[in-house]
Image (cartoon, rainbow, N blue to C red; front, top):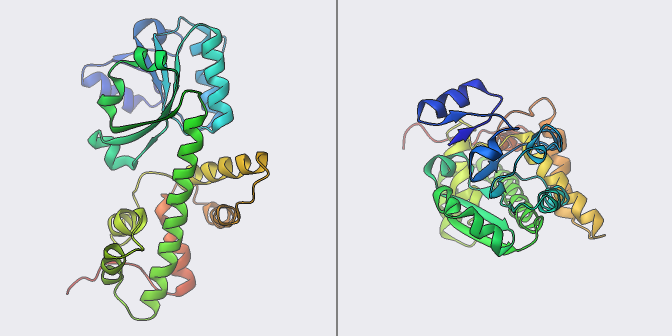
Length: 272
């Protein structure tokens, strides 16, 4: 395994486990599969630069991008790699830090059959489930943005509802038990709030800035399609206000917005 990362501690950790240092201009000639996972458009542009980036150097058998970069960017990358005779798979991942560490991420992917053949057994190594939604890069991004919007809306709505319950005198853990046994169960009630809000750790693993970026990409796609998305738009507005000054904080901190409005704190009881 060859690793390229601006963070020296990350590189050192992987090298310590048997990996080797490389650079963007060389890595394509050193490995069969290059995997990128980048958090911003500027980072993607730099890594895939046509002169001193991946697209200006020998290509590997396949490039797999795990980023959530939006359908337009993924389509552009796929076309650029294809023009050079390479294979590209649009493959954003979902599951958060815990599933990443456990190797059980869900992978939403789009690429040609030839690209998946070139990728070999890579996806089995990083995810418990591979969902192929199409053969054109960009299609997986759309599915991932849908997933993320549902995740963010569920987190906000569940936080709001639990704050109401707490203000009315109910124990949030008991309310969550009722919700998760009933029809209101969702990813926030089942995992994010019990594990990352009630504990007051706020450490799911995705920042407010990344959440805002994803909601913005969803809203941009809706604008292109001339499609009204009022719920996602409201969520984007809430997060746009909340993230200011909290860009690097965890997405689960949005529960604190509703706590402030309700004058309560969602936390576990010390004793039962």
